[in-house]
Image (cartoon, rainbow, N blue to C red):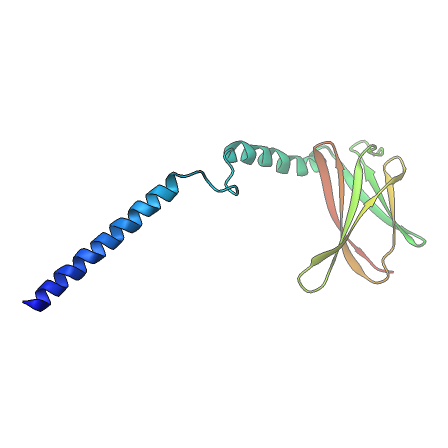
Length: 147
């Protein structure tokens, strides 16, 4: 009889424990959300989609990147569909290094002529990512630089 009573007590204690945990979870869920949770996630997701569509927009506009080595400089030219320079944008170079491809250096470049940007050549062979952006549109290309 004592063992039956013990089992009944244990089962009742487990039911009370689980019910208490459920009540605590419900109370915590009803409180204000975490600061990490975005209340307007849907609108921000739509904005992100518009931004990522803009990243491909440079190719849709007919832009292309042309690179050449000029002495100790890497010259990057941005041409439009008509072959003329695309002016008024911003250019940056990211150089990847290491086994995991960590970004070592991010170098913004200035236009030295309309649609023409120049950067000093790195000391050794490197793979760099070149990104040109103007407004919401941008164009990205990868270049292997060998000295």
